[in-house]
Length: 245
Image (tube, rainbow, N blue to C red):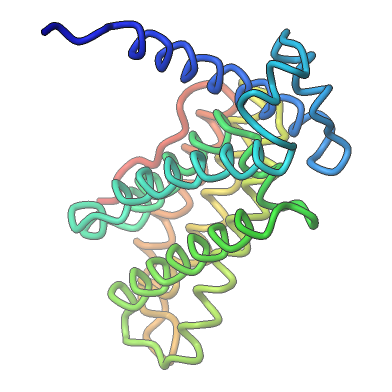
């Protein structure tokens, strides 16, 4: 006996409605913040009645939890494609491009992620999942630096460098997301990559922990990289790092 297609159609309509409500919630959370957002505002943005919204979500917290959970899962999937053995073997400038570009792209496409994750009163479940993701990323950053450091770093120094690099990236990311799309944002990305490169290069080049200072060639390569970033950003092009020779 053929299966009745009506339940599947109802389910598909329900999924479309949920996606519509979550997109509206993302826009309102970005504009007003989590605390100032109401379910009525989300319903207006979605162009549905409050009653329709309540058929799918009992309150604002449930909407935030669903939206946050989906965004965190997408972020996990993006990060899983970043910290790969192939990327870890790249020269530092190219490694910075390979790691930062997907993270920057994700946050620029999903500004609600920062709006939700950095709020002081977001639902506890979102905060817990974000803390787990944060710890996982920090661990990956730490292990990447450990494997690339020349000479090897003591654990306390390694922890400080990983914490600082991660904090610098998060601070720069907020400026990138806030910048207008186009040349201004591209220039902000270029500056962030330059900061990361200049901070991490001495560790990889061997100037930290008593190692020999970077060679003149390495300094020249970094200078060339910085100029290339700035020139491309000012020209409105894609910001990448030319490989060192």
